[in-house]
Length: 569
Image 1: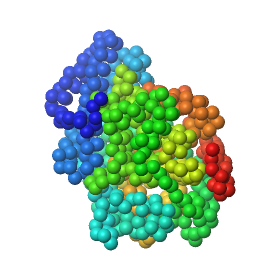
Image 2 (image 1 turned 120 degrees about the vertical axis):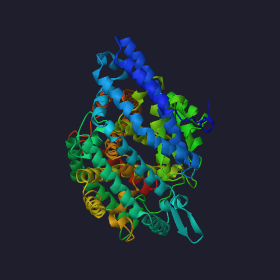
Image 3 (image 1 turned 30 degrees about the vertical axis):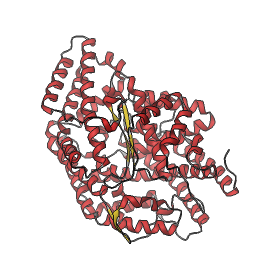
Image 4 (image 1 turned 180 degrees about the vertical axis):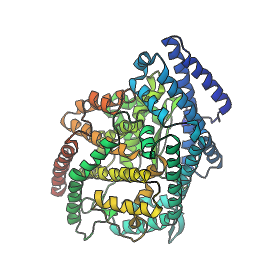
């Protein structure tokens, strides 16, 4: 099996590639039989995988070291030609809409592929190619600014990412010191972050106008491939969160403040639910998860063995590497690549489970005739990852001392609940900004402060600096690079919690539900996939209230054990 580091890189000849794609597209469009259309579609799928593999390798190697001159240049080239590739995809979507063999082909691809093809036509035109290039340039600038942040310390200037573990220290004073340093670093790029985002909002508004839409919000919903729901359903969901969940989460943090005995619970205290909270998380997470996935199921065992044998991961913390995490499919090699800046903290462990959950889905889909069926909408994709965060619970003893497991579970549940209001705030922020692109940078900061009060009234900042100015959202990469993605995390969280509580009642039933979601994702849309797997759709009445009640009940049991000094069995 080839190792990722040994994969040769080859830049596509885009002229030759486009010619070949257009030839196969013509063959698909003019097919006289379903079999001929199917064969042409297979060839088109192979061509898409070829491009996507090249682009993915560039992205991975560029984000591994943004100072690498070769891959920095290749990333810029990929950003430049990506709109041309998207134009080819758009033409394929149009051809899929028109083919007389749609019903027969959907037997192999799933019906969702053809529904998404209809949406693709609405959010692309050759007229926006230059605008997309500018959008890519601005997005890349955000990555450069945030990946190379420096921190001033008594020992001199160091990469900010090298100090990240201070932010999760059990010592409150150390956390406070870290965030003063952190805010100073981010404040140094604040004005340029304002300019970059203002540029992105303006160029996206321009794109929406050229595509005949009133606002970019409409384009966002199309580009996210949402075939099951729209803006109205999401707004109603956000209101339910405000009414039913925000008071519950606010009370949780007030109880936490009293337990900790502090006058004000600052944002850097939120992850410390009990006095003396400390996690001794394994440094060797790769080996720990060999045992976890080896025990979880036959499928996870095979997946993880291939992942590690091919070294399709990079978890190191080092200068030049972006601070983040993702799982990207390297299509021609049928393997996902797991990327993370792993620092042996609570969050890092949860993130590794999350990203390998994404990877597991990609790996399971390797036997499908069409790889593009792996590209399900992100509301489903995030269920794969967020559910895995919970599915590893029975094996946490491989990653930390037994006595710390109940604390980890409590914090995980509390974080899952409190994340939902935050994610809704991000979504409402983006919707408001794109519905009103004329807003100034300062008006956007004021908007965020208003939304924080509505969704996170428990949040307080220690320093009168970056965060208190209403800039918390600027640390959220998705807001800059992938607009309207974030609500999908929220919807997925409600589904992952349903999977979790199913597993708590009956592990086999919960696992089978999870596997059904993996299998149906990409072939069916969000609503249909959930129904087929036996889950409730988050927009249904009472879902938020029921989940919060179940979570609070389990947290109360965990809290009683923690404060009573009794460990879980």
